[in-house]
Length: 74
Ligand code: FES
Image (cartoon, rainbow, N blue to C red):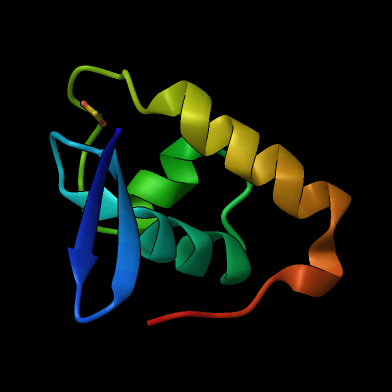
């Protein structure tokens, strides 16, 4: 994973192939993504190498365990 700092905001790049950061993925989850394929579809990208899939699935599991913390992001 790659961490970037932009104007005092930290972004975690989860999918390097598609430049998907954690905010975009959380947005997809907040909008109903239930699996990594849903996340890719919501973000209009395709899985390439698949290295991000495990992290996305952990984010999905975390969101399922704490749905009250989900905030839709753009
Ligand atoms: S890192 Fe996400 S498809 Fe390669």
